[in-house]
Image (tube, rainbow, N blue to C red):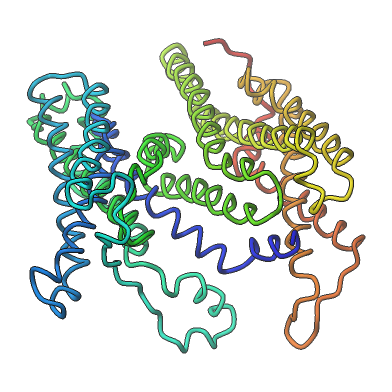
Length: 489
């Protein structure tokens, strides 16, 4: 069973699943990014997604009755998409009206919008179907089309692997990743995007040069409504084929944190969304193991908590950096602090990942019977995982609590902690990959590696990868400059 799960994780099907579950996170995350960079973060993403998801179901389900079987089948999914997005825009503009026109508090208005989205969909669903839980069986939606790639791509070496990932993906998934490029282009290559960034950075200065601040913020919230609406439609017409009460399951709230983890740009936001998608997909995979069901179910939520902790710590670091920039003036070394911020995220991620190990170990101690079919000696394995996790937390924690140490005289200790942590994680990942690949056909021969060879290759690759990642994230700068003078903020 365990070997089957490992083989499943290292497969094109698993990567395809990551893309599918990333879609309803990525789309609202891009919407949150645009509104946040304009200075009016859209707190109501969850409610917008729910309303759009339900609207898409209703209009696509009734399309056959309104336009006939053939025409309704053809235009039904697209009608549901358009109407779902339209309602998403109207919900976002409602938030804009309350906050920008009536001067209501943005946070409270967004929370009210979320309550409205959850309540109104259930009320209308009950009127239409008599069911407060879901529309399945009485108001099933049509699904958005799935994109089929040309079959000849499956016969091309290497390309065939990517063919398995991208073939038969929903059009909504393609829209989501195309939207990353479009949002990047709009934000950084168009006058409208530059106006949005200017308004978010300093609305008074933007207004002084003739930029219509209110109009730009209305536009930003409307665009965020479009993207959140697309994410909601995917939930009910791509991910599933019916509406279920509160089916977004917190994705709108996750989308609020994703842009911050992605560095406030579309590419980073997409990568952060893929990380959430990975945790969501892997929770489904390990759920097939005969272990306590609560363990895989908590993985996506633990990932969310990890993300919020990292964001909070990075916000504190950002505040100190701004203070130092003002204090040091022309002596401020922007390249040094950029390296420190990247390496601090690495330390945080290593420690947060080790927290997952602690949770796994506690689960093994509290419910050992749930792991006996996966691990021979549950107690010994739990102790080993707990000790290793505590060590990884211990060596990274000093550089989380005092990030300045990363670049001061202790920079070599920071480098050792980061590289050692990466060595463990990447090494274990490579070993699992080799275990999954062992015995598989490679060209004209079969891969046959001993356990010792797998361990040697895996840990060797982990060490090399750890050094390269550390150098790329900022280690090169520290090596060239030998650290940095002690500073206070």
